[in-house]
Image (cartoon, rainbow, N blue to C red; front, side, top):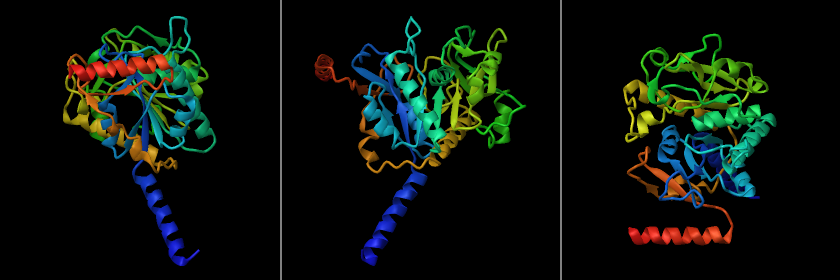
Length: 335
């Protein structure tokens, strides 16, 4: 090989390496649609606030559709630098306690993340609200640790209190004024009914061998429940609260703290996770074809989200495909 070709090859490697360092790619798992206009059997969705949240930290974002075939999902997991499970109001288990299709996909991803980290591939995972609940339950192996008894926790700004006996990686570099504000100034948005009791989480195995609760909140009757956790040994992080709303949601139907400290906490958490994803060495050379920006944003007047990405179902069943085509045609005619 000529010296010129060697130089170009090295340069190309350096460019790809540099992009891998500075432009991590995060996959955000979609969930079944909760909107009549976009039936759940035809569409999944992700609120745009989650993509914006991590794009603000310098990441590129692609959708991981929960109904993808495992081969396609694995193809994407092998190329992204981290995964996010976002919030929502859909079922991860059915009335018999079995995993729903969404729950099965989340379980597949959690197992993939654990295996990757076990094998030395630093692979971060983030969960918010429903994602926070799902990760912990899937690691525990059952859902009995999750209780539906959080009073006054839906659509409120709450305080977060630190477990001072543990030095968290997630909050290690948090500016002191934000650390002081989290337990005193209600700068985080909570919107949930289910919760993990602090003591139950602490004492549940195998959960407590992998995850450590790092902050807690109190409901209206004084119940102490976990509000964020992390793994001391691998890059798994999750919050019960919705810090992305402080910057990117305005029509939720309830009060959101948009103050400067709330917005700065959002940016801190986004930066933290994106920096964690920078440590992953996966490369995604053709990422432009997969970016979430390739999908059209939709605004629904009755939605709690400012804007939403909807993704057509990836099921291969012919009947479902025909229904999807008919639905899209009717929507176009209405427009």
